[in-house]
Each structure stands twice: as C-alpha cells, then as structure tokens.
Amino acid sequence: MFLGTHFPKLDAKGRIILPARFRDGLAEGLVLTKGQDRCLVLWPRAEFDAYAEGLRATPIANSRARALNRVFFSSAFDESLDSQGRLTVPPVLREYAGLDRELTVVGADTRIEIWSSQAWDAYLASAEAEFAELDEEGGVALP
Image: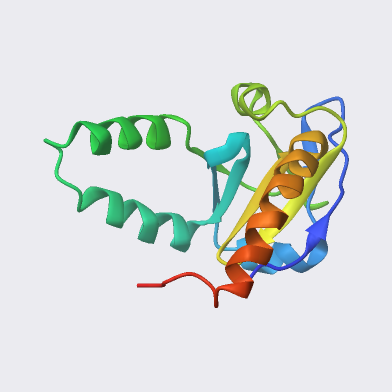
C-alpha cells in the first residue's frame, strides 16, 4: 500500500527520486501511464496487469472502452528505478502532466500518482470540499 504525500524535484534529465518507502513495492517492475486529472500513474507491475485485465474484459465494440484502451496502453511505459531510486519520466508524459521542477508524489493505495505541484494544489483545493461532504454523508457507495 502506498501512502502519503511527498515533494521531490524533477531534475534536468527528467528524473524523480522516489521516496525510499515506495521502492520496495516497485521492485518487481513498474509501469508509468497517463492518469485522469492530468497526473501520471506509477503502477507496480502486478497492479498494472490486474487493471489491464479488467480493461480487456470490456467489450471492444464499446467505443468508450476502445478509446480508454487506446489512450491507456499507448501511454504506458515499462520503466525501472536506477540504483539511486530515480525514475526517468518520458518527455511525452512530462508534457501531458505539465511537470516542471516542483512535483507532488501521492501514495494512492495500490498505485502512485505524480503531479505538478501547482496542479495538485488546485485539485486538492477543489476536492477537499467534496471530501468533507462525502464524509458527512457517510462516504461513497462502494461495490
């Protein structure tokens, strides 16, 4: 389980040093993809495979499912951490997420999200009001 919020810097070569506590969960491999809300998602390989299996179960005749599959898989990159725990973010993903030097890395249970700090702050400001409302209502209905 990935938890917490961290604030690494993006270096001139497009690399991020991931928090040490996240590295063990990525030892079996990782995949980096576009995420919703203009963030990036860093998946442990097993979690990516499980999510991909769910996508494969959607009917290919469904145009929305095809669109999701195309964007999701075409933006997926097999990556690895170097010996210093750094991840190189491909330029196309840096551009998609608007990443510059200041980053926010968020533990999101089974995955890690990478945000530009400016985008994260804006997202959090809008999401916290909804979070408070959901909490007051007793949460969300889960499957």
